[in-house]
Length: 190
Image 1: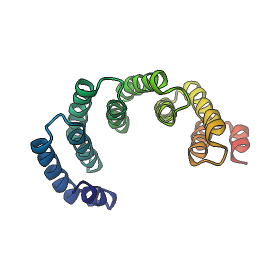
Image 2: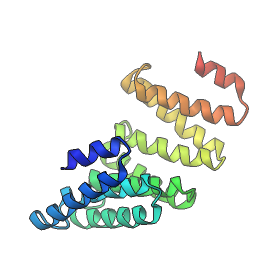
Image 3: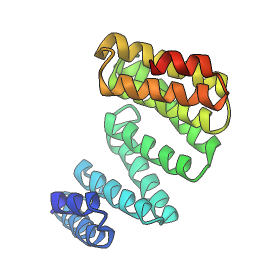
Image 4: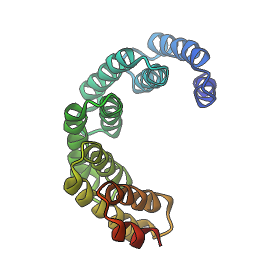
């Protein structure tokens, strides 16, 4: 049923996805329990469905509930907890709530660095998310520092042609372009 809901989500069939996700959550709460990680992941999926429908308040409330329960059940440093924090930060980001997004993105990034290491893919994603928060506020220097670090690490770890490396380069190009730094744009786009 969860896979069916995911299929509906991927097709943009939000109402159908929501109906199936609610069934999955109710069943998992009854069979597993309300604070079981699988139940929480399903709740996070429903929150994403709400968000994709523009129901930001409902999405945020559910993301907060999922995050707080993950923290209590699995601990503040567990990958699922950190993912749920990142999801909530993205919800803030998408609403232009930069300060709240930044605080969570910093927390997720620092925890992932400490727990998984500076070169872990999830750590690099966290750094990229924080950089994009800076970029959207016009905080070019801070965005650039993180983007260069992410790009160079991804080049070294994954290779110059890896999709994540290319995404990092594109993000840095965007930062340069927004500042009118055409020489740097040209050097990266070659």
